[in-house]
Length: 391
Picture: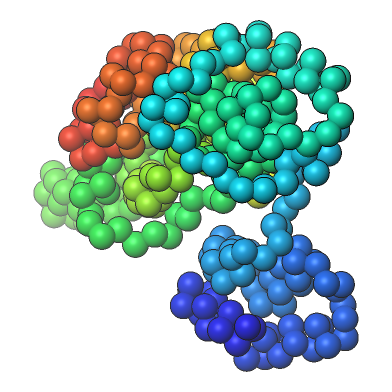
């Protein structure tokens, strides 16, 4: 199993050598770690990866090779016993079945009812419509269906109907070294650039030198000017995880192009919508948050603000305090978005979802209205429109 893993890492672009592989085998023989999938993950990464830039590639190769092995990161499920969430058999629902299931009745009703269930429930349930369980139509649990519920103990989204998720999920950073299949995104972004001469006058001005020498009766008169730099400043906020997993490739291409084209680029991640904090590293997003207020105090009004996200979520995540799918936000996401728009008046939202689907998703419509109709598709044509809006 380990030899194929070694070659899978090489195929994934991790420059692992025989020496490092032998180091891992020696560590296993010496029983440096116990029989734990998580311990083996960290041991093998420590032995085989020399540069943290390759962590994402290693993580993906590891997950693909050991798919089905014990989960690497256990969810933090509070006081809900693990036994309640055991997957005894996944239930599938037809369109007719789903149409018969009614939502509980709004955000406040969901939270109030969940509190009651936690107080009343004493054992696990399977296939029901009331208790926290699996494979049923209850608003609380996993591997079932409800048009508006709280997902608990499920490793990934299935129907994308949850308004809150009671799990600690791991997202990966976008790679900034993706080789684009086309240069069109870079060319489109160049339309946003504005050059200015900055720094010391240490670059020869050939035209100025010729003109000044001619005016000086042929005596050489060297002229120098500061080097030209791209003066555009960009704040890029990238949505990660959930439904954005469908758009990772195009977002990485955009991210790579932006890192290449703009000297003054600052990027941050968020999940679904903007709240009181964002982060720079998805692996440490629970530990290293960055205050949104602090960003608004740090970066001047001359920055261009760009959001990249599909804006596909529960409307509660936008308009409701506490509506965030992963934490309790004291203020609605809409409030934070409006503050950012006032701070950076040149702004745009790039949506990787096809524009034909926008009108069918309430959250997209809400976001588009908040952005004052400055939402554009993440296509070459959409980039052109966004760049015009940012000027």
